[in-house]
Amino acid sequence: MAELDAKLLRTMRTRWHTPVLESGAKALGKSGNNGGIWFVICGLLALVDHSHREAWVICALLAPLAIVLNYGVKVIVRRPRPVLEGLPPLGGAPSSLSFPSAHATSSFAVATAMTRVDPAGAIAFALAVALSLGRPYLGMHYPSDVLAGALLGVALGLIVPLSL
Image (tube, rainbow, N blue to C red; front, side):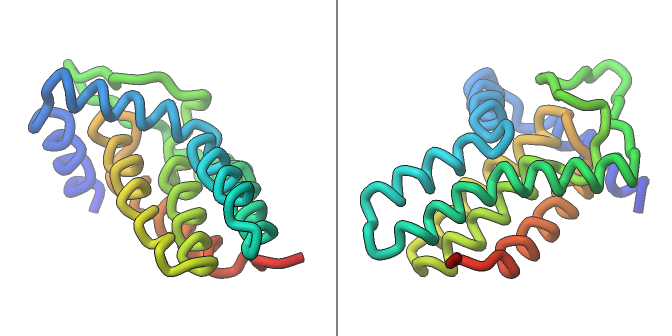
C-alpha cells in the first residue's frame, strides 16, 4: 500500500502541472486553511436562507471543529509529510504531520452536512474534491492522507446534529 501511495504521489507531483493549475491549487489550498472557505460559504448561506439558518451556522462551525478533531488524529498517528527527492512541496503547512489531510476532513465534513441541509448542497462536493486533490498535487500530502481525511469528514458530516 505504501508503495502505491508513493507512486500516486509522484505521479500527481510530476504530471499535469502548469502555472495556471499550480496557482489554482495553491489558491484553493489557502482558502481551505482552517476550513475558512467553508466557514464563509455556510455563513453566507445562513444570512440568506432564513428557513435553515441554524443548520447553516452549524455547518459553518463544523469546518473549524473538523480541523481540531483532525489534528487530534494527526498527533496520534504522527505520520510525517511526504518528501520527494527533487520535488519539494509547492506550499507550506502549519504542522509537519500529514495523516489525515485536514483540508479533506473539513471539506468532506461540511459538504456532507450541507447536503443534509439541502440536497442542492451536493454541489459542494465538487469543491471538496478539488481542494482535496490539490493537496497531493502540491506535494503536501500522500493520496492516502486525503482518502482518510475524506472518510473522516463524511463520518463527521453524517453524525453532526444540524439543530440545537
